[in-house]
Length: 184
Image (spheres, helix red, strand yellow):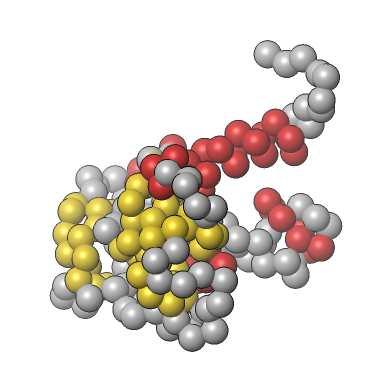
């Protein structure tokens, strides 16, 4: 099915709004219609080559939307469910995960290879940072989809995908600020 997306055709090039073809969700995959996507500095770093990404790519890793379809073996969400995208799901089995440091998961970005979106001419597209949120719809591994409680605005939820958790992680895990401490 064709949807529109902001595609990075080459490192350093401007994003191009174009039609892309998405596969139906396969086993362990979910198709999501995006309602909101945040723009993070990591997207700039991917587009200018500071961070490496195969191109062409659909960037965007902060997103929230509604489940459109689920593939076989997906049981934690159903069509119609509001969800937030998680670009770096922890595998639970690598060394960092076994130490409880899931934010350092060695396998967090492995899901990107499982989805085979492509341009209208058949050129494969890489989902930058797993979720390709700069599109009308995306297909992602089920581990990249977290159900939202009722009433959470999707525009607000999109920020949970990176911005909010990055701030929390910096304060809790890196700076280790604890209750009662003062910081500037």
